[in-house]
Image 1: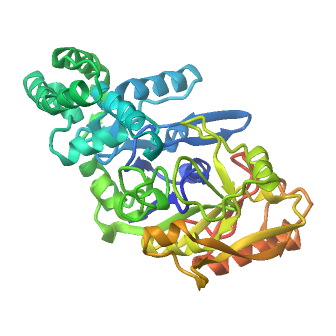
Image 2: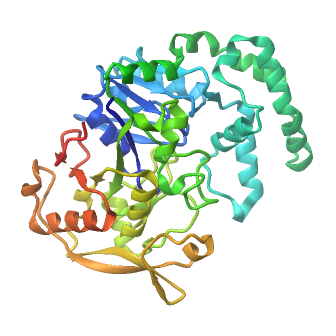
Length: 427
């Protein structure tokens, strides 16, 4: 039962879309198991660039069945906007499956997200303002709206009214906003029911049956390990579990069925939003990484914060996810530097620390301890094998592999679908 989990090993934006798409021709199902349209994947096919936010990257591979699992939160308007955009470009989206147990991002979830961030001011988390967090909060508070609720108007109305009982008190009395009318929300949500219906399925049953039939299933995480609600840099995290364990709960597949866990690792480090970032650069090198790497959020449009590679984070990702492999992306961006610093440890209160500190306070005060590796100037975008890389680029990859604790099985040497060196097969 070849089930693979593919996830971000840093703060997200590592290039998971490229990796998922690369594997898409070899797998039967690609499953998003958490997050919502706060995630963003850029996939380049030939001279075409696709920006995906909610849809699994496998939707661009005709042989593959893309699945939105029960752990995802779905904004129907965003879903149909993405589907329409792909259809207009000739992409067949008819095979998409969506779990009936996935929760819906309602208009009031978006409103609460935006006004809460505004109210927090300097203490804001840096959310995307798309209603993701409030929707997961509703799920945990058992007042959430699931896709299957669209097909019972009575239940839908009761649930919307229950959710708004408290939210309207919050909006009117704390945030000085107008109350939201339950009937209007129900009416809007029901407009999506008919169009959603062909996609809605018991995805837990379908995926488990596929694995029993020796189909290849790829579970695709959004965001990254350091944004995990339990294992990330809390509170500057997302509202779900992008780590490997989230694939089991978010898709309804038991952990004994997972055969490989692949971490996507950028050759340097980036993050979007607030929160600690030990290797962040505020100089010309940071500006160069941002410019050459095209480091702007696919979903947010915000410039990404850029820094050198952090091996402490990579080791942590290996541990909490049980990573079996790494896919190293954007190695080409580092071409041209004479020397490339790599963070091998932190200094905290004068002491060297080689593992991610347990304390939030310690991590905020962590200073990177660097080792410097020789760079290269040769163009590597045409490299097809590891041996094609310049010696210094090979040494850089091997050093990152040794520091990170899992083998690097593939290397991205350019943005294109074919600009990848495969060292070990993932399947």
